[in-house]
Image 1 (cartoon, rainbow, N blue to C red):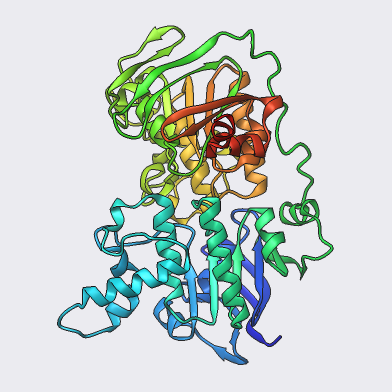
Image 2: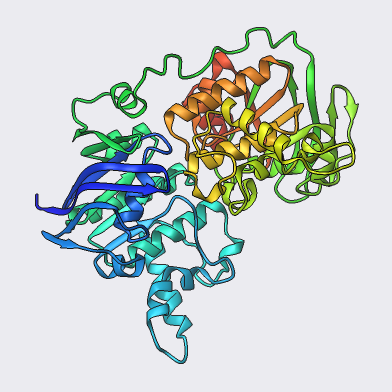
Length: 503
């Protein structure tokens, strides 16, 4: 295979922080090359250098055998480089078709837009991904998974020779992911080089041929995946043995008293009468296919969606939750699956993010905000979550995706919650940080905090949760105890196979 892209001795500093130090990397034509590392290891910085967002302080970029200086993302596109970011960056008020062909539209000089042609072309690109998303629909009306697919479709129109994908399946269903991989293997057969960034080991070992591992801004491994085990790859990424990836589960939940009870909750649309109880000391999982109503259930319980019927009780007390502020006041906090839109304030410092829902904790008796108390709180919770940053005064936008997720979690912990509803708490987080978050959630549960985890990753539900509810079409499809949980059992309930067999 010929070498499409080569990076030689790439180094980059941001102020006093060294993000990359002498990194070498090569991408061959017709390969899917995995790029792995913990959050903060330098993956995003390296990809931003390839895309022209950052200039390297040292080192060379060689494309098709020639040294190049990439002046920005538009120049990178002209050179045949496409990057799909982990964070969705679409124009919410523009249509799907307008977003997909945004680079072409911006470069054009037409007085009138031929929307019929634009929509037809967009439909063809989406069909490659096995999707029938309406090209004329405004992006703001799409689910997170469909927005991610629009980002990917946008990259597929660029006629690129180098395609970079940063956690592309984090918000996708299994079927959507399978359709994406079919497209990637077609592109690979056409000689396109693909850089694939993911924390999902199964995807890496199934679809990639080589792997490069970054740790602390340095290249610590590059070679074929054949002969390498997942445990060996994780050790190279984190530089240590994670030991027990999942913490020990709660044993005696049957005799435990309910902490939190939901009875016949409905929103008149997506949630259709669901009841459950969360016991003291347990982590309750909520599983189901994308669109089943998992997130909508959590949003209805905590007042982000209006409940048309149903009751919510905390330690036996009936709660009147009409909006999210009511839930917070009662000690119920919710982590949104959409970190960028609803999890953090990207343009504010870490300290202000963490204190934003707990201002009384960092204010004087006169109601005046005390910055010193705010910074102490942020440092304490940051240390608890092993947040990697250059201090709590820097903007959250400067952090890696995984560290942004830790800030979102710290923001909830600052409220001293009695019940935590965690929607995809480890999405886009590396294996080391995932394990840390799992242990923190178990520690909170052991301390008496009610913990509910919504996750699309079935191994996470099985490994972390003491019990799991399975949601299908807005209703409770079934419940599994820890010793009953398998991927097959969860999928059978989620897909309705059990009911079909009984019929």
